[in-house]
Length: 216
Image 1 (tube, rainbow, N blue to C red):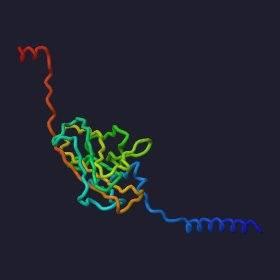
Image 2 (tube, one colour):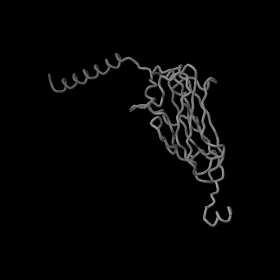
Image 3 (tube, rainbow, N blue to C red):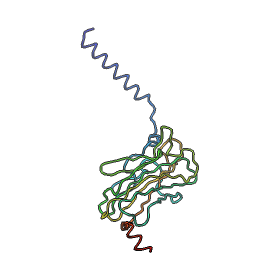
Image 4 (spheres, helix red, strand yellow):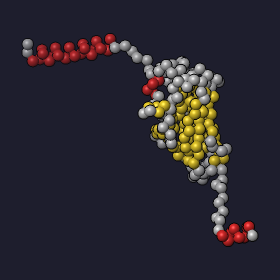
């Protein structure tokens, strides 16, 4: 058998093995488990973004509760706030979220997001930042097995410097059936909340002279 014939035979054998594996390998359904550690960035429903419903089930069926709290109606520039996102839905047992904060004018990133606990993390895409759930390394930010909710995640937001104007938070929550699949049994909720810019609190320096002038 000459060299050319042996080379052709080896190539044909390799091709047949690969083809046989492709035919025999079972097709796998997409798994929601791959997003339990972090959702894809850009799924908050903000301008130019999608939502988690691109992988999960129905959007805003009206039976879930998605809330945000911790920021006053008028935020104070430069102030750090502990923000809490809450999610509940009867019949669901695993949970996730993603949130971002944008200026109402221009939709640029507004303020700074931080994840102080082992249940949350900060993600980034282009010029936007997000906070989301995280799971693994002994922590479970998806609250697997927690029936019905409510569950909640807390993160920090430092308001932007003065002059930025109104800030809008865009956020998505996912209430899952915990079957490990992206399926119709998962439900997605979206919401937005806007906060106007307040005035910095004036601080009067206290001196001994000021105390004597005001309290004698």
